[in-house]
Amino acid sequence: MMKGWHSEWTVRPASFDDIDLAVDMFNARSRAFYGENQSTADEMLGWWRSPRFDLERDARVVLDGGGRMIGWAHVGNPGEPYVSIGCGVIVHPDVAGNEALWDRLYAWALEHARRLVPLAPAGARVAASEGAMDIDEARRTAAERAGFERVRVENHMRIDLDDEIPPPAWPDGISMRPAAIDRDLPEMAAASREAFRDHWGFVDEPLEQVLEGWRSWVASLGDALDPTLWFVAHEGAEIAGLGLFSTRIADDTSRSYVESLSVRPAYRKRGIALALLRHGFGELRRRGYDAVELDMDSENLTGALKLYERAGMRVVRRTLRYEHVLRDGDDLATRTLGG
Image (cartoon, rainbow, N blue to C red):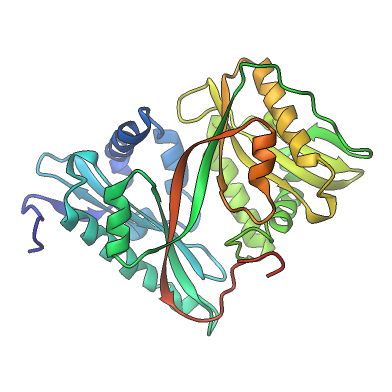
């Protein structure tokens, strides 16, 4: 038996009956680091019901002798081209110092991720990815013990809506309207795919797979989705950019989240992204929201950090991004502008 592992602990596949246990454990960790709950049953079930995620196959839980969930690991199926495989390991803060628990879960996650390697194109580099807050020493060191290497830093940013928001300055020829999701979703998915091609870590996917992901994402948002807060900047019939805001962060309806902000390359350097942010901030302030938050790559290749700072946002915490190379080869992900 692995040193530090308790004989009364049980490892098994996850099931939908675990939802309350999982929410309790995820929120115990978010309270430990953020001082608040950040998971709800509805949001978690939306993730668990994603089309390519098979809960029983793709997730493992650890229960203690009293039936409390103390560990979780999952591996996502990224779809074609199967070269960037997301995974995650979570341990209850009460047992965060138990290395055996972390190590067993990471060992399962990497073994499970390796089953997808043969699906990737021959000769392509395949890597598993994971994230850990910079202050979460237990998770960081466990990931590093498992062979993950730090590759990026992600900023979590925030703006408090206590001051007047400057009005948006829309460029000539650019108009804005709320999204009509049933009609717009295919064009929105295509526009977003084009806009993110030059972002670090982007891996191209078939458009139908991208659209499937968007449909799944929309379904998972549930009542956190308000189409009147999904703003489409357009020039004539062409989508120029998207500013998509949610109605809450977990159960906190005083804060909104920028789900996605993107501008297609042909429309950049015209102030559209800033206009989308300011329009969204102003509308949210008018509706009584206190703050807006988002996550972004701190070294974004297109200079997004300066944009968000200009819009009045500030960094409030950071997450480290890790990769574990499962097979070396030609890297299909974007790492530099133009490649």
